[in-house]
Image (cartoon, rainbow, N blue to C red; front, side, top):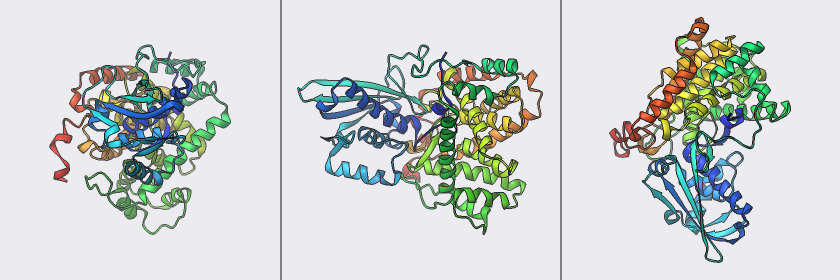
Length: 474
């Protein structure tokens, strides 16, 4: 069975896209590691990169070329100072040189040495090939595929056979929702308990807690930053940041200095029913406005859907349970990560493969299941909430205007968060033991729908809103 850690599903990175930005970035770093392993790195004198399919069609809007450059320079997406990205890229474009892995200075003109090819590779829509010329004149190349959520694979790892070999098999291997539910029932444990036991086979409790704390810190900071930054998003669509204005109206005259103080300030406000929807939407919009401006977010399970999970977690903390603490955050992330892994194993989390149902749909299902457990739901209700959330995202297309992760992507995060909360409430009011639609069936249906979906609705900007609205209209 494929063993996927929670920390594979929730990764810290830089926006705007996990498959089009984080994936190519990580591919560049993997290529460097491959060259070093083959003792060829020191001999590289020239580099060219070919982008294919969806990476080419929406690559410029998704900052794929920028991500490739940063990966070739050896920067880590988890730690890079995002405020320096523009100056790094400007310097390379002006000097027509880059420091390969921050070690070797090579000539590199992005306009001619990053090539956008419209044709699709057979293995996956998000294909890229790195080419190098060595000092002896030999030319070598290596292809990678960004399969969603920042995951990068080589072609020889076939879909049905792939296994994350760096991980040993979990003590409780899970391929389907029925496997997870069986462990919960036979051991009389919650979903988060089962997931935690599997994670403990990879790392100790201290590291688990540390990494979850890092993830939540980035999520909270992205919400905070988005809510306190006004202006227009880059890219040419002239999209005004809305989280700032909404937040100003909601927070009023509250005084605070840090993200943690901000949580308390929100808790102290008198939140009326209608304002709950506005707060949740504000949290989700804030994250994805940060994502759209090459800010740091948590891939959950993708960058395009990064706002759903933090928005729903924040909802629980400031609306449902003012005493919520790190233990609640940990529980939420463990469940969310496991639900996401079920979709990755049984379907896809790549919009280039399955449309937006694979991003917002999956993130909504993850958040719905996680919230349900925090609200006291049974494992059966957790899976039912995830099923309800995805059921009402089936068939959702990916049609970003101008290839930018802005319209309709940012609003969809708000809608996904609201649907997750609604799905949770419906599951909690239902005898889930007699659910009509099992989660596994919805995952299978999602994958079949993805395969049937026309390519122009799969992150190519060749259909839907992407062809009805252009930059000139904005």
